[in-house]
Image (cartoon, rainbow, N blue to C red; front, side, top):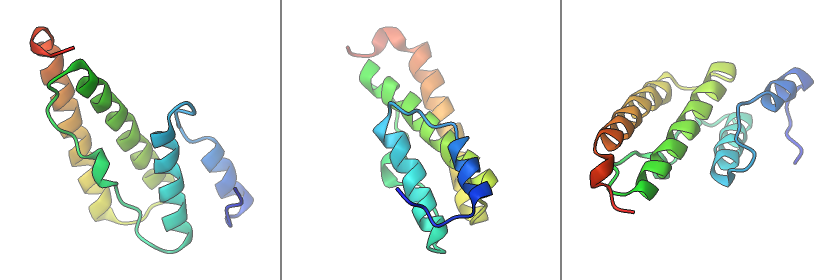
Length: 112
């Protein structure tokens, strides 16, 4: 995919902490870059909103959400956009950490 950015910025994208085996992670990267290139404000997708885990699948999803938010924050650090989105991402990251920790403490109550 051709991205209309200068070579140093493309190199920075190549260094991004993306999970190559995760399509959602790739989507976070591409959404951010597309919005950034188009002069729009990159934000977090609604599917990244964390919720309390009720099963081990939900716990796995929380870990994936954490990685996606962390990638978003990394991108925001390298390609700054809107401070409100950054604050929102930091809050969501903390909520995700709390949900993960709660689920780990209640692991024996989670469904399989």
